[in-house]
Each structure stands twice: as C-alpha cells, then as structure tokens.
Image (cartoon, rainbow over the protein chains, first blue to last red):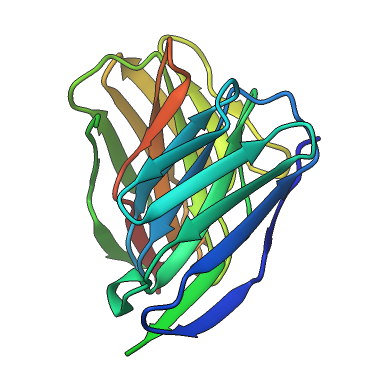
Length: 109
Length: 115
C-alpha cells in the first residue's frame, strides 16, 4: 500500500529565501508524481508533474525532482514571495493517486 | 491544461436532506473520475472511483448507500450525499482521468456544510 509523507508539516520563512519541500513514498511503482498548491478553502492547482521516466521538471521559480529508487521527491522554490504562501501537496499516481499530508508554507514579507 | 468544473461550489443544507454535486470534464472525455473528501487541515482522501457506464468502486470505510455516485456520460459524474449529517460537512473534490497520460485533472471543489 502506497504511503506518501511530506516533511515538514509547516514552514515559515522570510521573503526571498530559497526553500525545499520534501516528499517521500513507499512504493516506487508509480506512473508519475505531481506537486499541487492549495490555497485555504480552494481547490488544487497543479504545479509540476514528473513522469516516472523523468528526473526533474521546472516551471519558473519552481523545480521538482524525482528519485524513484530512493522514493523521494523535492520541490525547490527559489526567491520565495508572500504570494507563495499556501499548502503544497505531493501525490503519487500508481493505480490510485495518493496524497501526502501537505506542507503549509508561510512566506513573511 | 484540461478543465474540470464542479457545481455547486458551496452548499448549506439541513441534516437529513440529500445533496447532489456535479463534476464535469469540459474538454476531454473521461471514462474514469474520482471523488475525494478533505477535512480541515487534512489531505485529500479518495472516496470512490467513478466508472462510466458501470458501478463505482468505493474505498474501504466509505458507505456506498450514503454516497451515491452516477457516471452516466463521459463528461459527467455526480455524487449524492444522502441523508446528510453534520459529520458529512467537508470539502468534496472530484477529478477526471485523462487516459494515455494517466493524469488527473481536478475540479475546484464543493464546500458542504450540514446544519
């Protein structure tokens, strides 16, 4: 059974810092891994999707990596901004899409 | 990216009533859709997999008679919460699976409050 864990559960940083969010998973038999953003009371915004054959994906200030052999993914956010404050979820797509618990990020001005 | 809509976005109902939530895939046909539930400060939990033209597959612990799912067309799945109780208050999110790339596209969610 796939289990997805995200560390840390919450993170507060000053504006401008680079930061890394971590995601680990127990079953490496996945089609892809996605990182989502969720604002309070809102739905999911897909940020990056990494296919199982890929190692990383980049979009603007975001970079996500995938290491299937170790069961890990990281989301790197460069030059963080207050507008980046949200909960970030990673999810592994195998037979089902299994979500981590999320990291609640707060970027202070 | 693909667009998935949900209606309503927010609903308040009295305990004991039934509520229907619609999930539509607007720009691709989806033989498979999913329904998730999210309680405050928690992650999304899969409730059931909705299959076009056949019965839904429910996750362990989800009552199929309470959460009725109908997937009558390739672009529409509905979730009916029957005899709703306050503990059913939650954020319900659907997704549609785009086959071939095995990627789910999510709706904006429906906030249900049962009084």
